[in-house]
Length: 128
Image 1 (cartoon, rainbow, N blue to C red):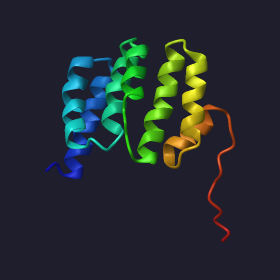
Image 2 (image 1 turned 180 degrees about the vertical axis):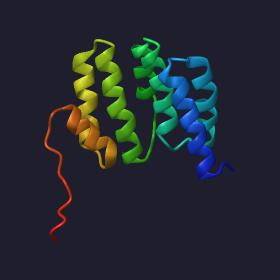
Image 3 (image 1 turned 45 degrees about the horizontal axis):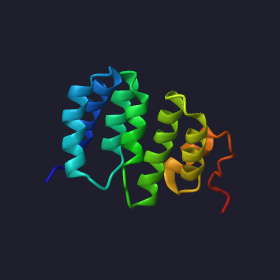
């Protein structure tokens, strides 16, 4: 089993590759993490970021559209990034639909989608 610190380190290394658009190296790392953490969005995000930085936005969108994540918070993250990928692929209407779907979901992905749509984000009330 992969420890959390090891997964974090591999994710950081994978994001270095993804940030440079180095799809082969990012794929090696994130596909391994995907097998180890199939219920998490972050390996898919890494695969998508590599493609976005390589100028392959449509491919990134397809990866995220096919995510099939059961957890609503994980699905929201993948869906928000899918909205970005669709926008970069020139598919504005589909991007908006993906972001609206993500905005209705809980967690950080829902917050990200609401911000990308220019919607108000509810902040926790610290006065309670």
